[in-house]
Amino acid sequence: MLAGFCAFLFFYGLANFGLIGADEPRYAQIAREMLVRHDWVTPVLGGQPWLEKPPLYYWQTMVAYSVFGVSDWAARLPSALDAALMVLAIWLFCGRYLPSLESDGALMTASAAGMIGFARAASPDMPLAATFTIAMLAWYVWYESGTKWTLAVSYVGLGLATLAKGPVAPFLAAVVIVIYAAVKNDYTLLWRTLWVPGGLLYLLVTLPWFVEVEMRNPRFFHIFILEHNFARFSTNLYHHIQPFWYFIPVTLLALVPWTVLACASLGQTVRTWWSQRESLAGSEPALNTFLGIWLLVPIIFFSVSRSKLPGYILPAVPAGALLAAAYVRQFMSNDERPPLTVIILHSITAAVPVAPALMIQYLVLQHRIPWGKASAISCALAAVLAIALVLTLHSRVGIGGLRFTLVPVALSVAAVLRLGSPALDSTLSARPVAGEIRQIEKDRLPLAIFGVPRELEFGLMFYMDQKIEQYGVDQIPSGEHLLVAAGGSQVEIAKRVPGRRVSYLASYASQGLDFYWVAPSRH
Image (cartoon, rainbow, N blue to C red):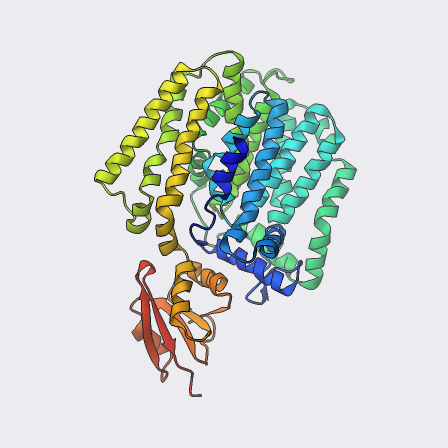
């Protein structure tokens, strides 16, 4: 069941809609250019070094391209594989520390909304989350058992996490472990964790690439460390500013449908610790305490950051899902049911996403909820599922009833893939735009853009596999070229290319675009 459900949640329909946003096509194109150049060291975009991120995602995607060819679904495949690997690690972990819940704990993690979304994204967020999660789970196994090989796995996992997205991984791990040692009043734990062979393993994983890329690109340290780590954290340099509380709703949404159970478990853990704080040893469940700290540290850390994006919080999601699993096991061991309030809130949280999922095409195309027959049917189905889930959980003791939560999850994912994919593809991806361009052009011409979002620029760069010139930023091509512009821009375009013939070719209404042929300059 676990393998089949993960196959559906992570792999099914990866190509249903094209790469969206600016990041997906940009990362996919960087991997392609690295593969073409046979260069496994320097990330390159448009022929120029692109040193914002380390190479783990690019390496994985290069392998996928080598095996399956260059495509958007191959670019998403590494994230799906990493998510599956993480779920397997959680299954093994639960078998030891949440016995009788190994499959269900893994399913709860796999079915969290944040996990599903980023498992289908061509980005380094899932590689970071997967390797960080494996590292933290391995560290806890070492803490409980003392087996050195699991501590070695933890160091290797942190090394890979560093290659996924940088020094944030070991920093977060260090903060979690320090706080956990303080809560347990066991500071010798810090010295025991600082294991020299483990540190050597970490350096063996990370140092070769960092040294080599710095030798080839002397500005790497400045660009990657100073600009894309310190400056990204402390300034609004990259225009991703959000309010301080931004990651609270993001985390709650990322944990759907297990949000209520995770919050109930976290609240119970905090209350238990608070009531026992006078006792230095404390008798609160060690695992719950560890998971609670692991969940909260990324939320607090990234809340302080001036730059905020939803993917930053992904490493915290597995901890929240495991907290929910631990909460369920507590009632299973006592042959009890969770409180009715928790059951009702959990059922509503699990069922509500079905309604917007069924209306996804309206939300994408019209940016509104279509009040009418469609919305009534969608809301009615969500209400029926919520009531059925309440009745099931209230009447059945144990995990069996909770598995019914996976029904609205499966329905929501299926609805988005089946009903929403055409709308997502036509309005948010450059894939259909590239298809229109191929139909228009007789011969392959240079491509330029004017007045369009940067998401389209990177999307066309991937789907057309060529550098895209941007009017107003780059030098306007002097030769014959095709121009993709915002609708109604012909007068402004003529001002930018005086004396050159500009011919309207076609439009792509779904994204408000016009296509033009621009004659070569006479000079």
